[in-house]
Image (cartoon, rainbow, N blue to C red; front, side, top):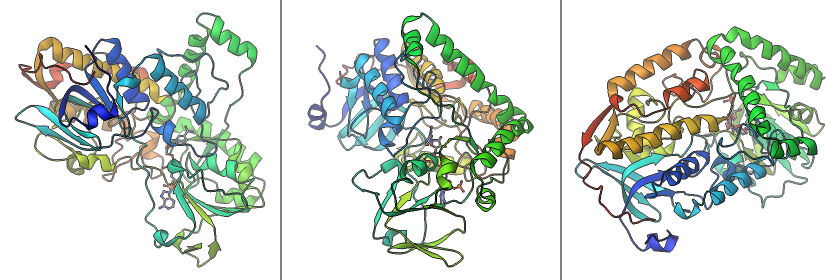
Amino acid sequence: MSRKVTDKAVANRPARHVKTIIIGSGFAGLGLAIRLSQQGRNDYLVLERGSDVGGTWRDNTYPGAACDVPSHLYSYSFALNPDWTRSFSKQGEIQQYIQGVAAKYKVRDKHLFDCDVTAARWNNDTSWWEIESSKGSFTADTVVSAVGALCEPALPDIKGIGNFKGEVFHSARWNHDADLTGKRVAIIGTGASSIQIVPSIAPKVAHLDVYQRTAPWLLPRMDRPYTLPERFAFKRIPGFQRLARAAIYAVRETQVVGLAKIPALMQAFELIARAKLKHEIRDPELRAKVTPNFRIGCKRMLISNEYYPALGRDNVDVVTDGIAEVRENSIVTKDGTEREIDALIVATGFHVTDSPAYNTIAGKDGRTLSEVFDEIGQQGYKGSSIANFPNMFFLLGPNVGLGHTSMVFMIESQINYIADALATVDRMGLRTVEVRRDKQDAYNVELKNKLEGSVWNTGGCSSWYLDKHGNNTTLWPDFTFEFRRLTKTFDVAAYETTSGNSRNNLKVVAQ
Ligand code: NAP
């Protein structure tokens, strides 16, 4: 008889074996968990370091947090939500959606929350993964990393920042106990997070200094609440919501032509962005300060109708002189100006190509992911597997990122691939599968060729899309339907395999 996993049960019983362990329960890990349950592959467990599902949507609770992909596309294809209240959802509504999906598909019981995975090592003798976590040890036939790219806050290495006496926190770890009302606040960074925070807090703080290193490009945000008739139609008219979703998908997909194939076409977007800038910022000095100096699309294109007006407020200054040091109660810029502050918000992004998690995963030859990536860069195969890491799959691995459309589409493509891989392993009685290095290399040569002409590589900016070798190891350089095609089925011929799964009859403990 199956037993529900509880924190207590697992904490009391170290080193238990689970057939498949999924690490992380954002859109990716949760989506795979649902698929495995639907296939009756119930011998899996999701280890999640947070206390709930949701990943980035659980963690990013900063004021103004919202998605810049329309809601009807930014959701699972198998769990459309006719009740979205507006075209671009806010964080709370998305998190509620994710929680609702987890409940509806009854997979919460397959989760171990507050479980921080501290190490995962491949054991060549047993052909198992050995996993250490804050809730005990596990072994697993297969591990799927679903930790995502935007989960480890990157803190800026600025002289003296540790000495700051006031409130200081990262955008993704918002301190809701810190009341910013009437305070002098500084925010470092002008990326997707910052441009949502700035207009949300500007009206209530005494003063806000926005420390900008690189000015971003902004496009209009076509956001609005759905009308009651629309919501009725999404709910009641068969096919209407799918049609709306398909239309959003198709329009967004056209951006790939400019972004990845013919960057000169991005000038059309640049015209719109320049017109917006001119319209929304009247002061020529401020306008010059926030005019970007690279081709639009090279960094993620941001959407906001409130950011520029917020910058124009009397109590907001844009500071571009570069930060020299942070003192106990102030920030000093390179021109020697000292600006006093009470609170400091660090909206400086995430460890994307240098995630600390890479130090904790050791593959077949004992090297960690960090060590492997140090040598060859963050390379993988179809974003889903990496040579030297047998029986390990990745959701949101190398080169599956997007700037223009829904990551959930890419995640579902990978779920197809990985679920089919697990089924293939069982069907063929395989003990191990490891992507062939020659296949991985060939795949990456092709990716590199495609990326060479893209706006991300040629647009004249430096961004987190590129790793320390200067290679773009984060983005998918083609139409997303092309990725869907590539990942439709598991191509076992691209993998080294060994057979004889001696654990087929192992009782699965975590059910
Ligand atoms: P980000 O895009 O990486 O932006 C970080 C900002 O901090 C940049 O302006 C960067 O300047 C600046 N910065 C970094 N280190 C600095 C330093 N040492 N000194 C001064 N400035 C520094 O991070 P993010 O805004 O958190 O967004 C990350 C990603 O999350 C986005 O690209 C997007 O994929 C996702 N996101 C999406 C949404 C949405 O859907 N609406 C919202 C938030 C985040 P440089 O440009 O000069 O590097």
